[in-house]
Image (cartoon, rainbow, N blue to C red; front, top):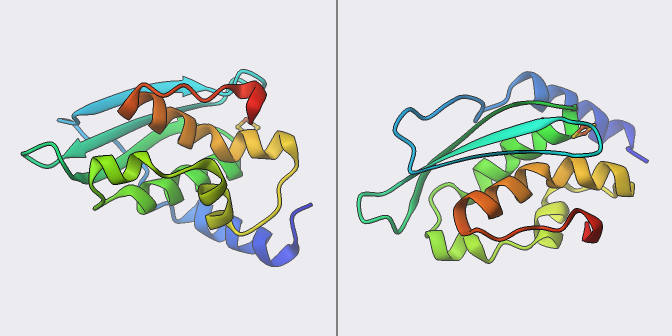
Length: 131
Ligand code: FES
């Protein structure tokens, strides 16, 4: 159940996504979808010259409000971090950053960008059945 305050925040953030877009010379580009609805997220990651720091993250895609806002929040969370540090971001920490309890179906929406980021950047597959 999504409470009204969070719903308003969600809509407002959805209308003002900070990290939506494309990075032309990205070091990492990866795209994957949510098999249960077909929504997609494509993530672009630009690393520092020495490849140790995430300098920029953008995303493109289509999907529900939660998936798009979650992608935007994920980009903010990992930007500026060392690539090895960002690898440690776990899904519980990410979900708690969203600040609400989500139903199992909505958790898949919220974790779509997380899943794409983990696979694209580290080759770590997040099993949908375990979400
Ligand atoms: Fe498709 Fe949310 S309904 S990701």
